[in-house]
Length: 320
Image 1 (cartoon, one colour):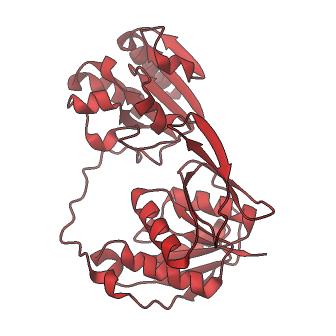
Image 2 (cartoon, rainbow, N blue to C red; image 1 turned 120 degrees about the horizontal axis):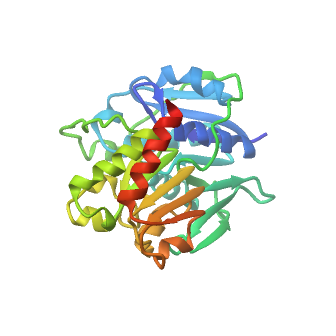
Image 3 (tube, rainbow, N blue to C red; image 1 turned 120 degrees about the vertical axis):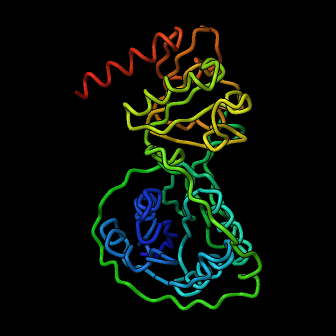
């Protein structure tokens, strides 16, 4: 069976959930070979093997932390040359998409971004994507070279599948461009204790109907009761009610959780483009004609300040 390269997204050896989802997808089209780079790379092998990696290629060097994406592209190209894979899978983050695009240019292949599903096909992997602000679903495959595909978080389940996970050192020669852009400083983001917005299984968002920064405590309380991430519409962000880093939409972050709860959000196409691939969508809005209701699985016509606190209380009661 052909091998499939999977780029490992990890923090000092702690593998992030989207990588484990990629291993599930990779097993559909071949044998996963994971590529772990940077500090703690060797420490990823155990969990990667538990989730289907037949081989783990590792390389630790200061360049991965000291410079931007080019060292990682150099390493992924070295892995590609070593393995000759049937496909290369990368998590669909901002960095992941840049890595994928640069790699595709180098190896003369096509690239597919923001895939939401992946299946084996007679002429190569077939990816499912949302197009035109999520108004259409498309299936496509790369017609030239080895497919390089980025996959949205929460697009596949995390399924344990024990494999050999043989660890091999990857030989990497960094290009001249690798040290062209240096990281001069890092500032840790203040932790809220909530999951990352793009990776969360549940997202609770607020929009114009929240009517003020001080009222986002209602949205946060519901999110905390569910162990969810907090999102915001562009209208709420532009008004200064919530940080831009939490914006969901075409000009913000694209999310695809198992459950998305939209509160006081009208459902403009800009917002829909960032959340329409959510598995289950619930909306609370006092305007029965709001466009968001054309999209939802469940809708509540009512004032969010009446509905959301009751929902939060009920969830906490059931948990208690």
